[in-house]
Amino acid sequence: MKPYLTPAEAAEYCGLAGPVFDDKAAELGIHPFPFVDALMYRTSDLDAALARAWRQSINVANPGIYISSKRAGKSGARSAKLARPKRRPSSLH
Image 1: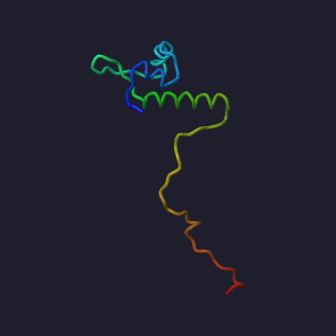
Image 2: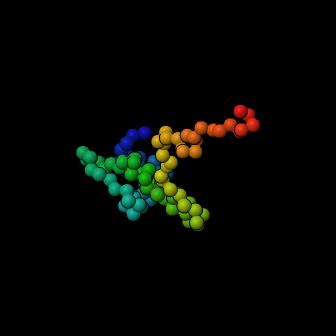
């Protein structure tokens, strides 16, 4: 996918009709930038707006459920419980 889209491409990317996209883009925090003689939208801005709308719809449909964009870390460090050697039962010595 291209990182920059024309207004018509941006509307299609979001699944909206051109006039609807034009009316709602600024309200959703999506702003074009001028390039040569055209306006362009960043797909990352469109993705962020779609994700915000999705999170809001989930929170409205399921009150009390918290959706976080943070993911668990992958430090590779083992927990202290896993790092301890296992003891054999005394009856097996």
